[in-house]
Image 1: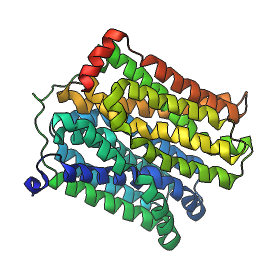
Image 2 (image 1 turned 180 degrees about the vertical axis):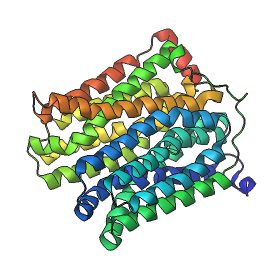
Image 3 (image 1 turned 30 degrees about the vertical axis):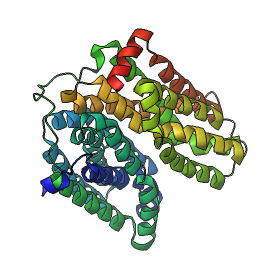
Length: 399
C-alpha cells in the first residue's frame, strides 16, 4: 500500500496527507479548546483557572518533548511515533471528556494535548515532508504542507462550535479524538518510508548551538515566540482598550487567521530570490511592525493594518522556519533540530503573556503587550543579521 503513495516526481499525495495530519493535530486540542472552554465551565462549574492551566501545561510539555519527537523521527521510527500518538492521545482525550472531576480532566486533557503537540505538529510533519521529497524539492514540500495546515483553525473553530451546540462538549471532544486517532494511525500505516539521510544518529545535541548561525537562529526563535505569545493572548483586549467594540475586535482577530494563509503564498518565491535568512528577517519584521500598529487600533481601518501586516508575518513564519532549518541542521539530525527550535519557540511563547501580565501592573495592556511583542520581534530581526562572508555561505545552502 505504501508503494502506491510514492508517486513519481514530487510526492503530492504523501505531503498532502501529512498536511491533513497537521490540520487534525492542531485542531483537536489547540484550536478547539478556546471554543470548548465556556461550555465546559457552564456545564460543570469547574474553575476557569484549572481549565486554562491544563491548556498551558499541555503547550509547555509538548514544547519540551518536541526534541525527543524529532530524535525518534531521525531514528526512522516514524510509524511508531504517529501510530502510538494517535492511539494514546485519543484514549486520554476520551478519558478527559468523561471526567467528573476537574483534576481528572486537567491531567488527561493536558497529557493528550501535549502528545499531539510534541509528536504531530509542524516540526514532525515538516521533517517527514522534506525527507519524502528530493533534496531540491524540500522547500516546495514544506510550502505545500503549510498551505494545507493553514486551514486547521478555519475548519476546527466552526466545526467545534457546531458540534458543541448540537451534541455538547463531551461528545465533541470524543469526536475530535477519534478523528485524530484515525488520521494518525492510517498515516503511520500508509506513508512511504522516507529515504535514508545517512547513519542513524546517536543520542546527543542537535548541533544548533555549535555555530554562530545556529545560535542566532535559536535567539531569534525565542524572540518571535515571545512576540507571538504576547499578541495572540492579548490582541482582543488591546483593541478593546484602544476603543473598538468586543465584536469588532474578535472579527479582526479572526480575519488575521485568513491573512496568515495569504502570508504563506509567496514564501517559495521570496526564498528563491533572497534566501531563507533574509526571508525570515522580512517575516519577523512584518510581525514586529504589525504588533506595533495594534496599539493604535482605535478604529477598524487601523485594526485591519494589524490584520494585514501582522497576519502575513505570522503566516510566513511557519514555512520559513521549516525551510531555514534545512540549512542549519545536518540532514540526519533535521528532526531533532526542528524539535529543538519548536521547544525554544513554544517555551518562549508561553513566557510572552506572563511577561505582559507582569508589566500590566504598571501600565495599560494597550501599550505593554504591543511593546513586548514589537521589541521581541525587532530583536529577532536584528540577531539574524549575517556578515557578507556568511551571506555567501547561506545563499549556497539555501540553493
